[in-house]
Amino acid sequence: TSNFSFSRNCSEEMAVGNHSTVTEFILAGLTEKPELQLPLFLFFLGVYVVTVVGNLGMITMIGFSSHLHTPMYYFLSSLSFIDFCYSTVITPKMLVNFVTEKNTISYPECMTQLYLFAFFIISESHMLAVMAYDRYVAICNPLLYNVTMSYQVCSWLVVEVYMMGLIGATAHIVCMLRVVFCKAKIINHYFCDLFPLLELSCSSTYINEVVVLFFSVFNVLAPILTILGSYVSIIASILQICSTEGRSKAFSTCSSHILAVTIFYGSAAFMYLQPSNVSSVNQAKVSSVFYTIIVPMLNPLIYSLRNKDVKLAVNKVIEKR
Image 1: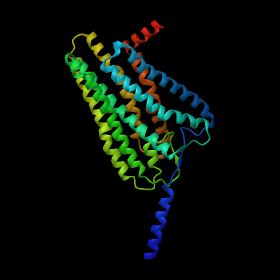
Image 2 (image 1 turned 45 degrees about the horizontal axis):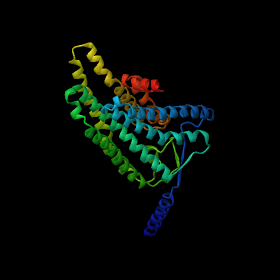
Image 3 (image 1 turned 120 degrees about the vertical axis):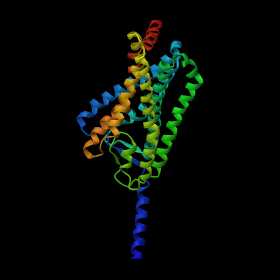
Image 4 (image 1 turned 45 degrees about the vertical axis):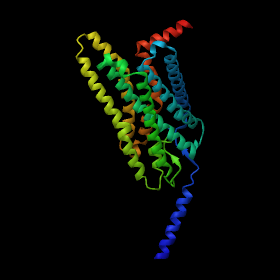
């Protein structure tokens, strides 16, 4: 019995050792239907071009327009930078999948993509919370706005946003690097996401799941509570305004942010809170498209089409040209 146990342990260790040297994965992509490959490639290429032009255009316009040098637009330019970056982390590799028969990604590239995606998606979550706090101060404490939201405070808030992204992404990637992959190397997704990767593990993922749960409190629950708390106070302040015009003006400064928050958290919640069964895999892919590809495109459109200051800046640029 002891000899059998010894040989079994040795064979298991050899198996783990062989499977732990994974060099590449295969991304299954968004769809396997050949007739959809070209239309989807053209569609997402157009979305990515709009995303790049919109977000870089927003950053440039805010940088060169002196009347947009306020805390709200400082945070908006940071949000545009985050949207541009994490869209660039995901979309180009996704486009490759539409024009190649077998879309492979090396192990280092996969871990890098996961790390950058986690960093920017966590940063976006906290940036939306910071923008909600900025609106809270502007509407509930307008007389103290310039003091409360000084340049130093805004800079520190942005630094803290990126620090939260750095800490969260580092924790996830460190736990992922200890995972042993010994199942099929096909990732049933169009990018290296956390849960599709964990499905390929043959080692224990308990630590990874604990880390996800722990950091979800800081990176999901805390920003959501901050946003909800800010808007409860904002709504209470708006209701105290006597004039209809004053209420409308106060609410208009928040409407773009509310829409951006609803789309971001709504699509992410639909992706991660639905039951994990085989029939929901394709639904999960479609919903993840919204917060990884569509949301970065919509944010600059939302803030430009619904904002008079941005429209004024665009008109000035056009008049100068």
